[in-house]
Image (cartoon, rainbow, N blue to C red):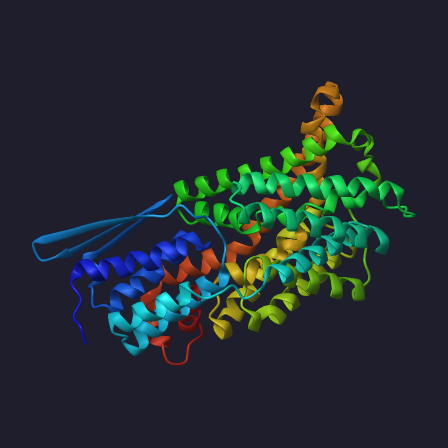
Length: 438
């Protein structure tokens, strides 16, 4: 076995942090994994310090009187939950089985060089299912949902082609939004009574679900600068989507006549409809973030549970949409902690796909439309339309806070009460929960 120097070990440690940061892991997840790597390489915890900053990682290791400092830049801000999941599993095994550094590095390189689990064709098809299901969720009929799927498929196709030819990421989003919205215009000529729903649902595949969740999670977890950076990144994506809508509106004059008042904000669905919609939305979104195939059925089941609970709360307990969203997300967050025991998947992966169906697409589109045509609105109309933006923001906050609260509370409680929990190590529930929270 080749003994690596402290500098070489630090490079491996930083490589793990960089890969996780570039593929959608939270700062807390990065730190926990990097600490496990350091332990497996016999770097004492008390001599180890990692600082996760936007676009750079700082690592300091003290060895006696010497102190070694290294940093690593990362520019990519993608989402690949399969890589995050594999590295998380690798670091756990490295500690348990005492992997030598060279073996760990070889496995890490194989993980990074893996092809994505889903081809572009599968992702494009999933995009159509995702937006078509959302259209039906917003009250569209089957014909409107089918047409929405076609518009979304073409939008995703142009987005992937743009990225392939080196177009800027945000420009590719604007192109996809423009293509999908432009095609949605022709829904006027369809024999359907819900011709407005395709405008609302055709671009929802562009919504940055993971970045928004990361922004609020990291802010609540104390990483304010990282949270603000990801919130800014999410805002740029939203602006790019709006740019595509604005361009389509200026080319297709009839888009100004969109009557979103005909799109219902609350639509009651049967149990069977919720069953199919929950599965389709959750699983199709999972392909966007490259989720492991072995947990797709679990994610779909959690998506069904989320939709059914929200529907029961709104129509049977007669609570507000915001409160129903919060309670449903809270339950999904608790179930995700339990499911993590059996899957070892990151909490983010187990929570975002099931609640993505809560996205207030109608409210978001109305808010964006008000910005597009703000010069045509009087003061009363402006404040009326801004109310939809506030409602959308409240629902998004209810989603993210509700689904992350169980993890944050469990993590904080278990860290502060580790002495109390230690006697229950062999048979206690709390010890197991501590492992999963970390």
